[in-house]
Length: 164
DNA sequence: GCCAACGTTGGC
DNA sequence: GCCAACGTTGGC
Image (cartoon, rainbow, N blue to C red; front, side, top):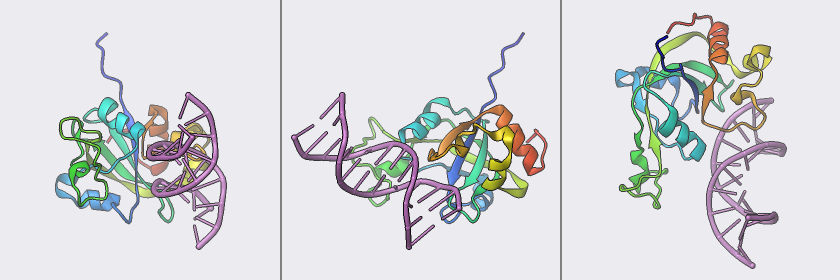
């Protein structure tokens, strides 16, 4: 039987006031570099595990209400986050060098709007999503893997089929 | 605005 | 290597 790469799904958080799903949707090519991530676990997911074409839930944190706002996909291989070298950027990291960059990012491309915004409260109320990283108490990871069965349930709740 | 939970820093 | 202090995240 031919071996196909496992489907991979992710969730990324963004504060809508800082960079909303609609902003990504309107960006050139509906694409942006996911820069500014300064957490090692989140970085490792981007630099070691993400593959082009992986599905991404675009989550609005600190929103009113917080929730899943749209779908995206991984649109590039990992590459060094340029903001770590920019002294005028709040994410500048003086300890990082171009020879050995500390922080990496990928590009994300918006792939579809949801028929409706999916509030966090609805995710919490869905028993099939128990165990989802996002719903864990105190979960702060801004880039996190999503299990395929959770991905399917989220899309179902949002009112769309499994196909992008 | 509050505050619990978390990750990082730095003194020892 | 421990762990207290600190800064940040993010729901409410």
